[in-house]
Length: 289
Image (cartoon, rainbow, N blue to C red):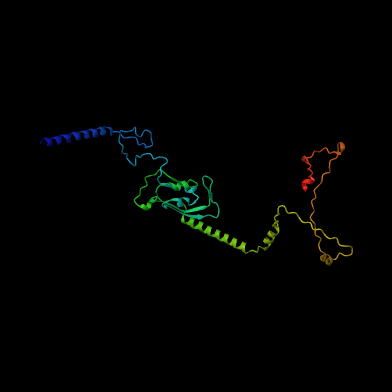
């Protein structure tokens, strides 16, 4: 019996401690907390009040660098197709129509030459990586702070940003087809025309290639034979052998001996002194025998 009443006592004590904590927070719940974001410096100071917000009448602030629903400013889009190529999940679908000439400018001064017949983004496939906003050259594709875009049907997650009607799309395609036909006809007529005169004119204007000069080579001068008087026919010149030019012989230049001084001696000293000659001893006649 002692254990039974002991368990009842412990249950009442633990329940009283829990109710004490609950009634303490209940007194502080008479006022609600100001909705501030986690990045706010005073976020952890507000430890009292109701935390639950009455959404959608109240909502927490979203950071400026948040990546949520995509938005495309179609007036600044040049339909370069870079966002669709870099998308890892293929959630962007673009249908471009080339224009024969520039038809407008973006806000940063980039010329527009391609019409956007279709520019759809399927947010149900988007992984919110932000790669499409990074490669956009005109920065027309951005990620907004709108995070509540829930729908009852998944097909409603496809957002279309193209503003052209079906009639305008058909007209732009017709203009492009006419332009391509005119361009192809002009190219064919230019090829069919004779270009011989133009080719000749170009050949005359081209300079002749110059032969490369060999370093150190000298022209050989061939002497012309002088025919005798009254005998200057070509047959005689052809029969006569051509004289062979001898190479000039380079002779050393001898400097004259310098004369002067007394006794006819030269003032220049010899470079080497002569060795003294030692006379040989005469052999004895007896020794020879």
